[in-house]
Length: 402
Image (cartoon, rainbow, N blue to C red; front, side):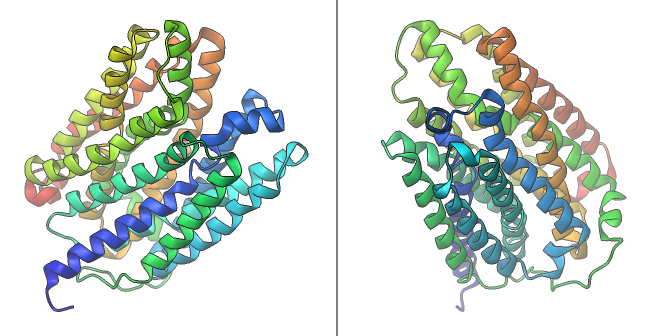
């Protein structure tokens, strides 16, 4: 393909579609948790475990990948395709599970998370190989695709598909994602495979720009996956409190999560123009405010609750791609893959706390007061962005815009 701009747009579309389809695995069981709860007789801890197992598997996989430099040693497109196909196969194993095999089902979700650790950071690295100018926008599109993909099982379930159909659909989409990634070539800014080095992760950790970017990411992740995992529970409880229907909670949950795809794209465009720390800090301020508003609007009419939740869904993930972009701009090219993987590993490790904390709070004090604790993360993230803006690394971000 001779025209570089056409090749770049084609790569953007293929990588984003691949990420969208592959990330349907993440919530393929969470979206049908109420049905599994009834059919398998799950307790509260086991329901939370359906998502936690994926998070734990992702953390373990990402940490192993970081230590072994997999994202820098293995060509990223190949790592993505192998991991996606393996994740799809493991996910299909849920079809053979039942009430007597819940521990095995949780093990399958753990393995699904491990394989997804080879998908998400790899997709980020492949995209950075195609974009230097406009990288914030490109990674925003990628995280937007991830967001819509993560939400897609809720939509499939909301259309009346039984849990087995949701699992099969997610696995088929993930196989398609593996095939799509084989159609993507190497970008002009791609980094050749690097030799394995035990010290690679330590080199990343010594970089203050990467550390501050990761601190912001940790604040973001404290909030994000707990909100995504439990928004359906909050909406259902709020509707019961109001004594009115919100329509299909599954479909509404899809839109609350999926609108974050639009947020990621718009934030990426803005960050390339006005600066990454400004946009990321602003998005976290908005999402933290929404978390604090949830008890005020709990049980309110749908015309008040739904718009607020859509704003939260828009803002809660809008900053995500910018933390990844900051890492690619402050880390050396040779450590780019390891830096991205390490950042995602520690971020997803933190999600284990709040994914379990939110339902525990809901049990103790009710859904009205389950979400405000999530605002602590954005507050810390805003502080990290303020610190980063005052360092020499700010000159490396968004062409010097900070």
